[in-house]
Length: 118
Image (cartoon, rainbow, N blue to C red; front, side):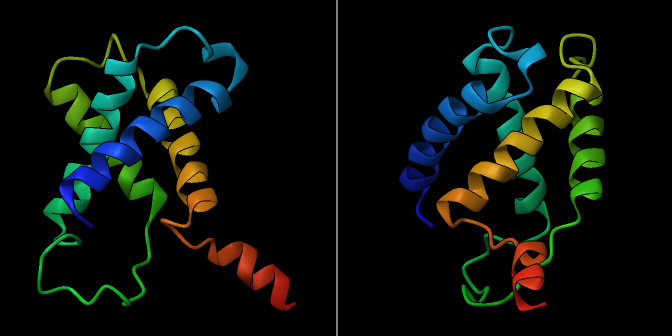
C-alpha cells in the first residue's frame, strides 16, 4: 500500500474513530492524539516487517490484538504521553480502528468468517 493511501486511510480512520469510539471518549480526543496512536500502531506493524516490499500481499497475517495493545502502550509510556493517553483510551482507539479496518476491508475478520461457516 502506498504512503498516500495510508494518509487517506488515516483521515478516514480518525473520522470513524471519533464517531464510533465509546461514548465516554467522544469529543475528548483531538485528531492529533488519535493520529499519534495510529502512528504507534503502524510503527509496530512496520517493525514486524509487514510492510516490507518483499512480503506477499496475499499472505494471511494473524494479528494478536493484545500484542498490538501492549506494544502501543509501551511506546506511549516511553514517549512520556501515558498520562495524556492512558491505556483505556489507547484500547478504545485501537478497538475502533480495528473495526474501521474490518469495515473497509483492510483486515478480514476471521472470527466473523468462522461463525458464518458454522
